[in-house]
Image 1: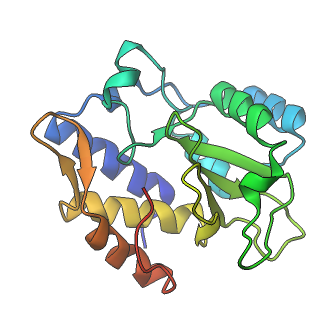
Image 2: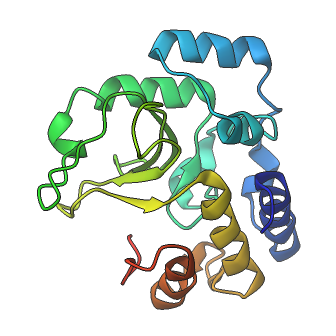
Length: 202
């Protein structure tokens, strides 16, 4: 399995190869001071995987093209900078119904960190509740009315799946220059690492 760094670099290189815009607005890596400030402000502690991810880039600089679908890491979701992640956390963490899976009655505690968001409230979070069995797992929340759930065991696995989907052409550019994915094929790759996934989320 690839490391997060290997998967991330493959994804970015593939985006450059296919002529996608996002790599042009990647921010410089986050420094330890900014990470510590983020941890203190949100009262969380980054795990090794989050530290590795933000050592590669501090998300993206949102610009005028943010509204045109040219800034995504995966289709519809962009990589949050530390500052944007803090803003997103503070504006969403209080809405506890957003986090409750009513089927399983699972609701993570508040030590979560958002890193991929779609601009309308749908988000992937790293569970940083160190005492929980779900520590390090990736939780998906949404505004579609679907049950939120853990979709990946770790950031490493999530980025492995994403990089495989770029490699196999499951994520590609459409005729308008935006990223798109084959949902069924994406689910088939993801299900190798998480067998309960039967479909892929929007």
